[in-house]
Amino acid sequence: MKKIAVIIVTLLLANFSFAQKYSSKTGKVKFEASVPLFEDIFAKDDNNIVVLNADTGELASVSSVKNFHFKTKLMEEHFNESYAETAKYPKTTFRGKIVNFDKAKLSASPQKYTVQGTMNFHGVDKVVTSTATIYLKDDKIFMKGGFVAKPADYKVTIPKMVTKKIAENVNVEYDYVLVKQ
Image (spheres, rainbow, N blue to C red):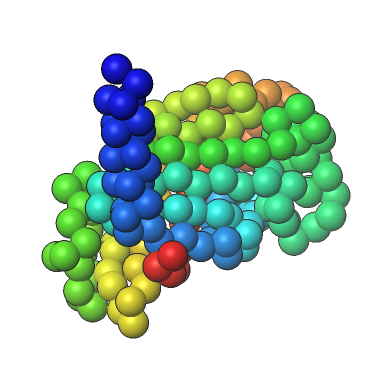
């Protein structure tokens, strides 16, 4: 019985180590929650970490919420302290899969894919589906896409005094250049 367990663990580790992994530590994620006639609400993180298993299409990413930078320090301070509560919820994560992903079919011509998974923000898990454009060039995988998130879905409380200044639907975009590991 002990030999069987050792063989199973060895096979699992061997399979894991031979998986084609692509990653980036400089993924770009930005969001916009602006409404007409009010100040633009826009933030960007250029240090999103993302890993793709090119054999299975599984994808995972993580951002330090404090890495999102706004055009004004005051807006960034309000976001971190009042809305995102970064002291309590320092990271946002995504775990999912690129539907029908086949690295062998990637080329320099961008192709549309559906990405499905679970995003955790502000301590709340929410299923997210997005459309991404993916292509392969110079042995790097380029991936760009977006989705809409609602602050209310993540239990982010917007004070009544500013509800008309912040969009109900937040546009989230990501842009990754993944390098083979």
